[in-house]
Amino acid sequence: MPPAGDVLKARVDAIAETIPAGSVVLDIGCNDGSISNALLERGAISKSFGFDLEDILAHRRPEIVFARANLRHFDLAQLPDADGVLILNLLHHIVAFSKERAKEIV
Image 1 (cartoon, rainbow, N blue to C red):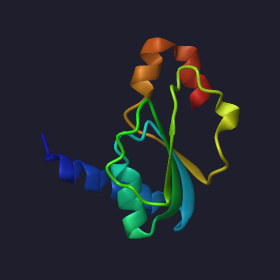
Image 2: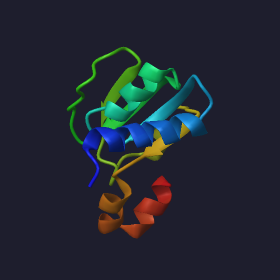
Image 3: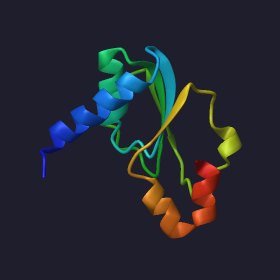
Image 4: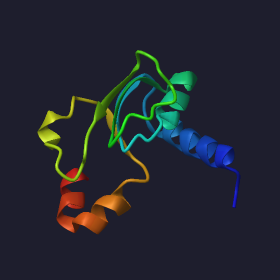
């Protein structure tokens, strides 16, 4: 298996190549905010709204706005406007709960 740092870099590279520079993203299941932080560091995004079950953000900065949310029950209409959505390492948890809910989120 590749080291975690290599995996993070590969993900960030792929995302940065896909979205317009300066985008605002929703990071659904943001975990510690590493991906949003790395995208901000590269200038690939200008702001991230991170959502996860608990606040374990390792990167405190004004461009990352965290909200505690259980996506099994969260009202998706409450999500802020954004240019793109990151749903990394989350859908398998939602699918295990409800395939229908996973479809709603996507």
